[in-house]
Length: 431
Image (cartoon, rainbow, N blue to C red; front, side, top):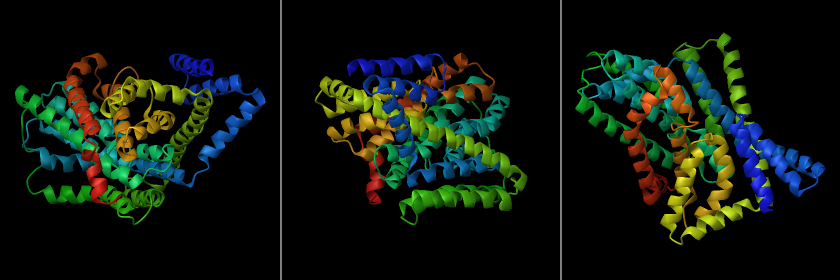
């Protein structure tokens, strides 16, 4: 069995290095491994069965609906409205444009559910503007890159829905409530770093919004921000389930962009639906193949091996949790957040439960860890997209990113060591 486990990991790593799409890597390595343990015909039948059974879940309807609402919002031109709204709160602060970028990423990322969308939409506006006002381009790019993943923590977000499915039914409402705190902690840490760097470098502070326009700017942004309130409060308050909330989000965003803002027309719907279909198909394929890999791991005894290794390092729960945290940080540097959640939740969650970690706390910790991987080398897509938005080389941005990495990891350690930070709100709301 250990030989089969080695084949699984080695073939998966080799295919990744060769640049094969990760869904194909998962499927091929899993089938090869299962075929070493079971007859080929049984292996192929089992693989097909696992893929279809993993997708036969009513809860999965929330994923394509939230994706569709995010794509509608991305196409609806709401970035500038949120940027102008963020300017209301940052006009007199050193590094005001960078603070606006952070706040804009937090809001737009939460609405769209995508760090890439936030980085390109908000950063595409704020980075050139910051450069024009005398900010160092690498610093402006670092601010945009570092704050973009906050929207993957601030609900609504598909990452927590995937974790809830992979963990066997952890409360999505509780994950959303705790994720909100984690996202605000991440974004707040970026603002602290930005403030001190901007003050030291003398990046000028000015009023970014003309007097008398605050009410108009707020009213223009309020309908977009209401989506977060409606969805999150609705789920947490028990008004509707996550699936119902995703459908509400689609109807709301369609009405907002087509009727209120009139930035999306009927002719745009075809492209929007195709883009949503492609994105949903990718996630569903990853979900199906990840279930096959989980089965391959189970029959080779790999989860038990990993569990025994980690638990054998120490009998101190804090030490074990920190080891898991470091492991997830490493995983996040070369694997996308979706497949990482689907593959490693069934392996690591039982270990966390053995040492007394709350499944909601572990889910928030896991997503936070993997979000860091989206902005770190060598694979971090957020890092390279952010560099492209700023038209800057990655190696020139990395030195400016180091202080942000420091405060983000510090917040991660606080979340890991003090679970009450993220569990306070879920428990207060009795979730």
